[in-house]
Amino acid sequence: MSRLVPHPFLTLGLVLIWLMLTRFSLGHLLLGMLVAVIAGWAMSALQPERPRLRRGSAIPRLLGIVAWDILRSNAAVAWLILTGSRGGTRRSGFLHVPLRLRHPSALAVLAIIVTATPGTAWLEYDQESGVLLLHVFDLVDKAQWLDLIQNRYEARLLEIFE
Amino acid sequence: MSGTILTLALDVAQITLALAAVLAGWRILRGPRAQDRVLGLDTLYVTAMLLFLVTGLRYGSVFFFETAMVIGVMGFVATVALAKFLIRGEVIE
Amino acid sequence: MSHLDTVPLWAAIPAALLVLLGSGLTLLGTIGLVRLNGFYDRLHAPTLGTSWGTLGIVLASVILFSTLEHRPVLHDVLIGLFVTVTTPVTLMLLGRAALHRDRAEQAPGVPPAMLHPPTSEQVPLEQSP
Image 1 (spheres, rainbow over the protein chains, first blue to last red):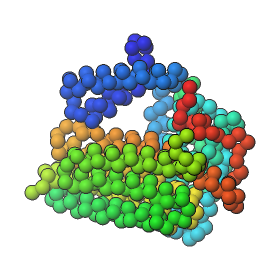
Image 2: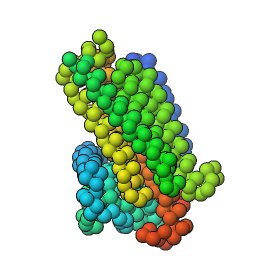
Image 3: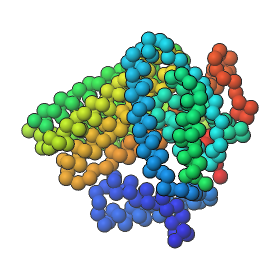
Image 4: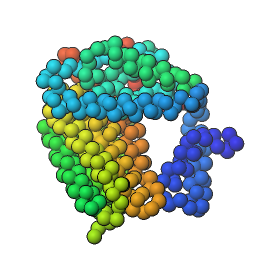
């Protein structure tokens, strides 16, 4: 089974995408499965190391938290733009965040979270020291933003990925 | 009834997105630096993609979806190449 | 009589609101792009359009096409996924380009390079074997 389908999540995702792009029928299901299985082999040829999930059950909770945060920060940034940055009193700034996360897939997920929430931008990550350089749109309290990245997102990602 | 609501909302959305595209274009022309222009271009691509999606809804045609997808892919590749160029001074190493 | 008249009212109202929300947020993002001072501040503005701006329009599209064709039409979700996955790459690269150029010009207020500057092979999204 693992020889035939080395990347089950990738293969399943590709089948679903194939069915989304076409009408559901038995022919398309078989064709999509064929394409997805071949893509799985190609992927294992490219990348021998695959991401391992430790606790996949924590994923829905993280997704929910991120969706809510994106909604909240959208409203916050939209309000700041509308009010002219609180009459010019808003201060933005750079922020160094030391990360414990080392897994490349987990870092990629963290990059998507940080960029998708308006108000934080991922600028640079140093692999040796594990320090991330962020730019924060409304930097009132540095400790609050550090807490957001390290405890709200990073801790959950550490739990999910091995 | 629902036709009137949807036509109105989609027309307003088309005008809004067109205005957004003009503002992104203003940032491309104005600069002041190269990275500002590239950021404006990226925003223009995303806005154009959304405009095509809304236009597809307005005319009930699925073909605008393919166009929007192509614009999205082109925008991604263009922005990555331009950003690479700003870092390295060359695109292909 | 256009195709839009055949949409039931319970689907038309949320779709109309979502379309207006999405396009409004995208416009706000570009207003920020024009009004904000400094590149790093402006870097935040387009994310309004790429997060809930795109999501609103994609959701409206799913609702409308699904009720029009009486089957789930989900291909627009792919556009949402695509935008979500590609925006971090473009904005991260642009941010690094700006940092690189500002440091080369020794512009004030820019944090110095870290001790081990990441090369392009070490960007976390590109998983090198």
